[in-house]
Image 1 (cartoon, rainbow, N blue to C red):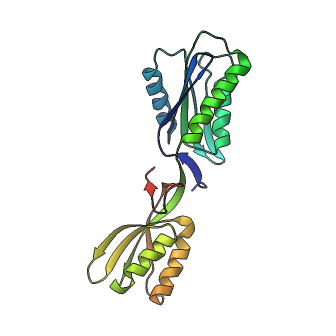
Image 2 (image 1 turned 45 degrees about the horizontal axis):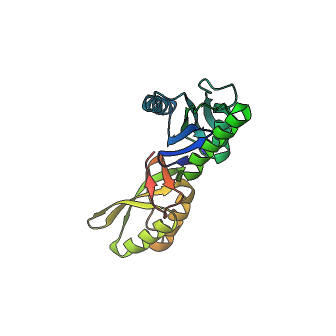
Image 3 (image 1 turned 45 degrees about the vertical axis):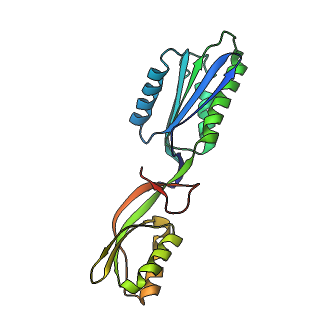
Amino acid sequence: MPNPYLVPLNEIRREQAVANSRFIATLAPAFSIEEARAFMTKIKKEFAGATHNVPVYIIGGGNKVTEYFSDDGEPGGTAGKPALAVLRGSGLGDVVLVITRYFGGTLLGTGGLVKAYTESAQMAVGAVRRGRRIPVHVAMLAIPYNLLERVRLAAARLQGEILGEEFAADITVTIQIPVETYDAFQNDLRELSAGKVQAEVIETKETITAVDSPPGTVYKA
């Protein structure tokens, strides 16, 4: 699985006025090129009367990304390229951004356009909540009743989340835990149970965990 990387958690919009032109930056998560294109279409439809709707996106993260930008009629290199540079510098992946411009009658010049589009992108990037896309194991284990609270504490300490508990002769626990802390969790289980309890992985996938929220706050990708 790929290395963890940051993604936006929500859609966000920021606006500024520059020499009577309106610049409206709308940023959102997008987990595929198709999602990014659908978002771009939605914004262009919402602001159909705008002078320009400048789209950029980065799909993927780390060393494996697909990037796109367009100047949408602005002079070459003055709009999409500087906005993409802001996204690259943010460390975000799986992100799409459309900067809408309503021309206000005053020409900004090449430098002015680059500055306006850069600042608009920075406003949106700086305000969006971030999450980290990480690989996790979903595992099951059967434990005696007297170990339940200690297993819960061990899971929480290692950024795990209890997904379910079934009570019978023993307690069957379903847990979701980052791949990077799974071995430590297994060690804790062995110590707690004198080697009698071991978790079994039933699924490996990716989730998005908010970086500005308590451990265990998970957003599905």
